[in-house]
Image (cartoon, rainbow, N blue to C red; front, side, top):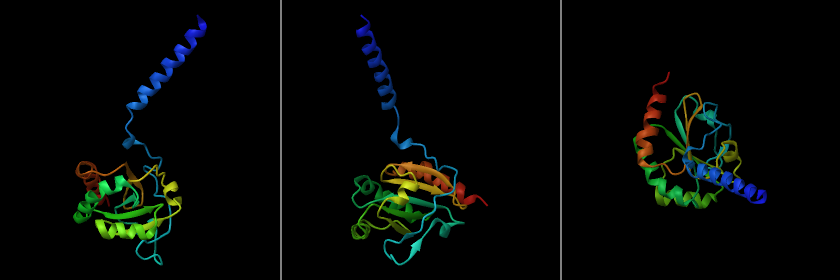
Length: 176
């Protein structure tokens, strides 16, 4: 009898954990970076590799870091939304071209439009690791002091822009 009860108990425990896991929302993965300084990096610009960009260059400005790649299907889905958001000029948008061929990235932006004020290359993924990137796309919002205030995992939608990004950016722009 006992040899049947133990496997049954294990099965029930596993089923409970599975049921709980199915209710989780992958877009709500917490970031250990929230309310901490943006991780430092210095990276070559995608369109001008001889020039470099770092978060220090953006101090005093509200900015977004959007992690993208030309091979990313979800990035293609969010790209028109980013193009529209860029037209509003609510904040600087920096692209982090993640584990991508620079020529493919440049071609992609040339074809689909370039919403980024600048895009930097992360060919080996080290910058992404420092930022805690799980996959692409991911978008981070930084305040004027360079503190990470929000992380969005997955493609940004029009609703995300209207309900989350623009109100947060407006609030951060108003900070002294």
